[in-house]
Length: 83
Image (cartoon, rainbow, N blue to C red; front, side, top):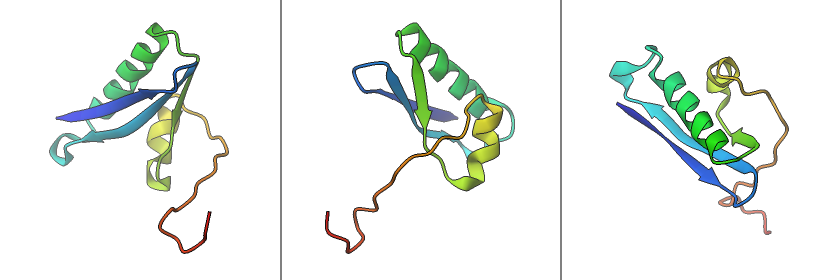
């Protein structure tokens, strides 16, 4: 019905990636349950921070699930700007 990936930097930071629920089962709390379980697993593994990047349309979802806004940087690697 859905899944989420939890990545780790080898230190105290975890990263929530690819949270998704099948369209037929959205708005039933499954996404929130996935995020909660991922956060619980990260905490149980001794992590101190859990990060997530998301599109603007998902702001309300992640704020409702305990995340707070933060600044971040992003490079679009397919742009013509040289690195």
